[in-house]
Length: 146
Image (cartoon, rainbow, N blue to C red; front, side, top):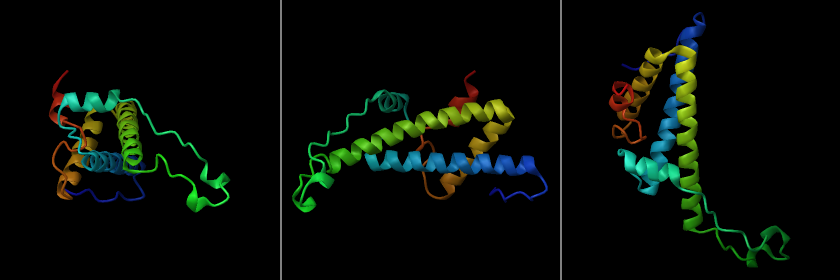
């Protein structure tokens, strides 16, 4: 059941649609990062591992823009390991942000509306080809454990 953008006459419906779009985009980016890193966010152990990682980016030893010939300056720390490190940091940061957004949504519109927003976002992700839970959200566990 795809949601249509609400009419301009209903500000609450517009806000709910905006909230759904925001969480969809956030979940999609989280899922893409996890897939790119080869991380399965479908189990608690893996999620805990991602959340507990400390960022250890490689230090830049030579500032390329200070070098007389930038092409000859060392590119230490600019390879695939550094890129993966940045992706892991982004994944962790987005997961923390999503938790904060979900908490704010519950405070703003309540548990029922937040659940519907998350269900619709998950359904949209499945329609575009993501596996259920690829973004690290298990809706049954999230809303049935209380």
